[in-house]
Image (cartoon, rainbow, N blue to C red; front, side, top):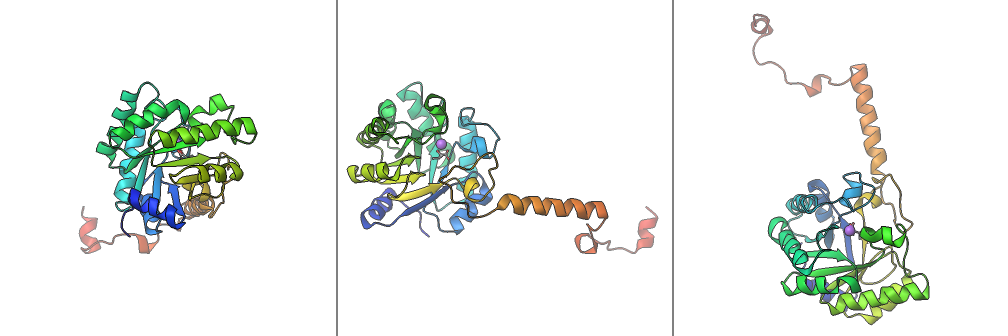
Length: 276
Ligand code: KIV
Ligand code: NA
């Protein structure tokens, strides 16, 4: 399939076609995702938790993100790829935000970037967007500020908190983002935001709108620390892998592996080898 453009995403919203996307962090997963016909791939800074084993996303560096984006691009050359700006790559200034967004474009060949926050990152989104780089906003539950939120908690469940989420959504659109991701808010609030905004609204754990995102490691049953309520688990890859490793250990211990099928035989008579 042909790689999506911003125009395709707008058209899909207009025609009511849902956008399906997942995260990917490595070459093989990116290949499989592209083969499955996914619309977009997010190389999330969730890579810190699901591929590097950190407790949260705070330690993730630009170098981590760039290197994973490069691997994903090699695996999915024809898919719209979103680079995720890690904590510390856009907090200091608009200049820092532009410089790091530019790095994603030049070094990792992504199609756009995503960053967390609404009202408080308005000038960042404006600056990156003015540099000609498409931006996806990310509001609701924002993992990089989970400390401030008191943990990985659903947002916008009461009226006061919901008002803040709506203000963030409006700020993101006004700042020039071409789309927005809403994480872990009630579907009623997502519906309201979707009806209020012109840009596509995508959900992770936020109900129906213009498209859905899941973390691949969650939906494949690979991330063991916890599974958020909003995740539909489509496979148990951990079980498949653990069983394969167990069988291999057993085969090796019992001398069943390697059998004759798995060796390279000599090409000269054995007598010649015995002289070695
Ligand atoms: O890093 C990521 O995977 C994300 C999703 C949780 C939205 O930003
Ligand atoms: Na992220």
